[in-house]
Image (tube, rainbow, N blue to C red; front, side, top):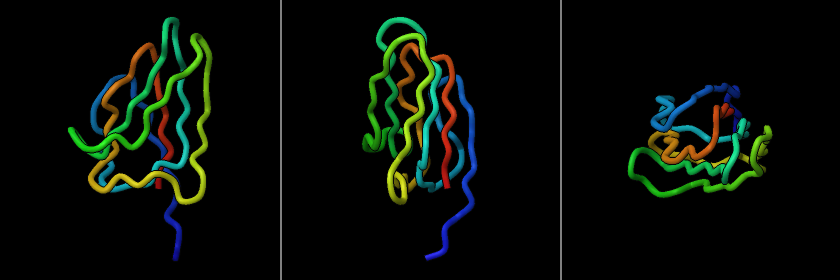
Length: 91
């Protein structure tokens, strides 16, 4: 199966990435103080596909193994708690 080109999108708030169906390949975040948490769903109101807690005041890189996490409708950032910015790499 041919692989698609990897693209990226940086966001600073919750909401749709607006990329349509995609596979999340990697996520990079910049966290602030408190208890940083990221929740990603398959579209608005869809099922949770990724829910991660992070250490405070640091940058983090999360590599997704194999073919990544598939979002059938769109990658939707439903919770971005104590996180300044997130870059999602998708294909």
